[in-house]
Structure formats: C-alpha cells, structure tokens
Length: 302
Figure 1 (cartoon, one colour):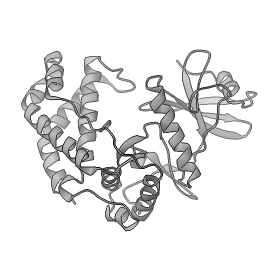
Figure 2 (cartoon, rainbow, N blue to C red):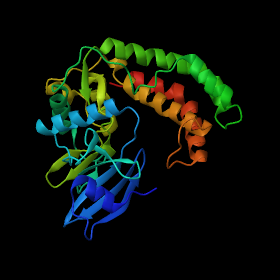
Figure 3 (cartoon, rainbow, N blue to C red):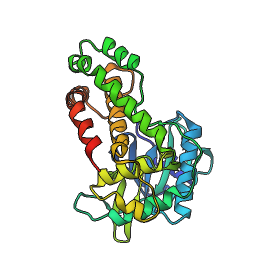
Figure 4 (cartoon, one colour):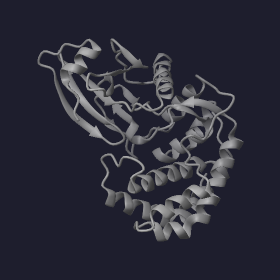
C-alpha cells in the first residue's frame, strides 16, 4: 500500500500544500521521491523488526555524517518510533532523508583512494571488542537439509542435494575467517557500488539501514572486490587486511546469505518482495551450480 503524502509531510513537519510523492525504487525496501516547497527528499519504508538494531544503525549513520563521511542528511520526525523512523496513521514505518542527485558508481570510476580513505576513517569511529557474523549466511548443515526437504519439488532441489558438503565446507571457512579477524567495528555492512552515488561534489554513501558490527578488514577487502579496486589502498590509510587466503571470505558469506534468502523466498518462508519466484528459483540454481568454482577462485584472489 503506498504511503500518503499528507501523512509523511505531517510526520516530518514539512509543508503538504502542492507536495508530491512518486515511487522511486523497490529492492529490499520501497522508496519514494517527495517534492515539497521546492525541495526533494527520499522517503523509505522501514521494517518493524529488530527496532533496537535499526535504531543503532541510524545513530551510527549520524555519527558518520558528523565525522565528515559523505552521508545524506536525516530528517528528524516529530514523533519518533525509533531512531529517525516514525509510524504513520496506516501503521507503516518510514524515514526521510535529503535527496541526493547522483549516479551509482561504475567499474570505470577510479575510487580506490576514496574507498580506502573513507573506510579507514569509518572504521576508526566505533571499534568493538567482539561481533557476530550476522550477514555471513552462517547456517548449520541441518538447516540446508531442512530447506532441501521442504523444497523437493523446486528447480534447485537436485543441485542443492549435491552441494550440501560444499555448503558445509564453505560455511566452516567463512566462520573461521570471521573468528580469526578480531578487528571488529561498527560499519556500513553494505558498501556496494549501487550504494555510492557520484555527485558533483564527490561520492556519497547511501542506504545505512543495515549498518552494524562486522570485521573491518573483511569489509574493506570485500568492498575493494565489489568496486574492482586495489584493496591495498585501505592499508595505505591505516587499515589492516586479512591474510590473502581469507581476504574474500566475506564475499562467500554474502553469497551464502543471499542464497539462503532465495531458498526461503521460494519456499514462502520470507516475503518475495519485488522478485518473481521463477527468477529466484533460477538464480538459486545458478548459485548452487557455480558454488565450488566461485569459492575456489575467491580463495586464490589477493
């Protein structure tokens, strides 16, 4: 159900007269572009689960902005539900931030030094004594077997049955690399090219809703891999990278996480969101097929 422009404006103290609200994008969450009083804002759906964790992510986003990290400015609601999110009369939760005019980063953009500098600064803000591998897809073998049992008629069932040992071996490697890292910090946790907008004044990092504890070095190495740049730029600015054999364990962990989500969406355990079930079945099958080769290549890369 679309949110009402009058309700959003009232919740954030913005003028509603002649305000417009149009859909912008829908991937993990729905977003809209709000135009009011000659200004533009991004309105975003906020899931209601894990409110304490989401509030912590929003607080870290503000800390990053205060430290000079390029972040869209949050708008404070008149009656917060948690963090910068508020509950509208229809019971939905939304947040609002300033609109950023820019384009997503591309492989041809030379962002190595910016990425290394920015991550080193970000990871100095909030070091942690410990952390859990929340986004790494760490599931016991029994869980994959349960999904296989529930999805015997799904297109990915046969290849999942042949990949159970590979999944267990990959999971053990990813979990061990995270334990060995020891360099835990609060960080963005989804620093991908589509979450960096290039603007006339420089790159801006968006989509901080998943920020939380992670390994600084594993995050930096994965970000360099995703942006196609040299990870050594992070070390040049004071960061520390994991050993070469473990350097891209986070990339494998994210693959496990996204694969598990695809299986659960096709089984009806999770809302499929904007994704077609046939597409989820197909990509899950492809990821399972390519798993051994993909992991072997990651373990060789520097």
